Length: 109
Image (cartoon, rainbow, N blue to C red; front, side, top):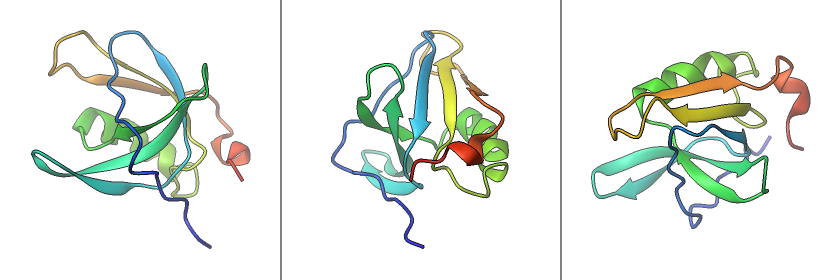
């Protein structure tokens, strides 16, 4: 099975304290940044259908995504989440909630 790869030409989305509802549509890949390599996934905003990259290397993102990924058969593809920062502070943690309990049944084909 070929795993969906992100479009690495897409812009990277930054999240703030306002919640965003997104669906992940690729497995993880890495991009080169000013600080070295960073893991990313491609996602789509469930409100406006815009596609973008989400950096998933922050500890608060990775710790929240891992149980969701494990519950989705080890795949990021199809995960629907709500994501936001605790505050506007650059170093504030991310808050992530799964949007449904049947993640695997709603994978994008």
